[in-house]
Amino acid sequence: MPFVPTDLAIHDLLAAHTVEQAQQLQIGLGKLRRASQHFVGSLLALDPHRILSYSQRQMRRHRFHPEEKPAKMAQTFFLLDCHTGQPICFTLSSAAQSVT
Image (cartoon, rainbow, N blue to C red; front, side, top):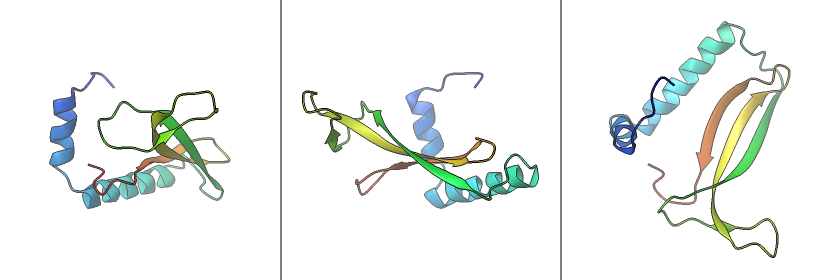
């Protein structure tokens, strides 16, 4: 990225588009990448990660060891092409009603 976006710029960008538009964009980009042979797509792997979050939203707290203090974690998923190792898409999971 040639610049570091501010929170306000990101919120303006997200507010200007619907979730459906974002999904259609991801699908279109995936079709372009497949047509350009960036990945084969015959074997895919879903790679889940819990990433430490500093969000002000109410989130479930996780801990990986009993002696650790529970911390907010964002549940993220990466979809990878197993043959090339190329990431195909990325998404977040949330139990909240609104993920915006």
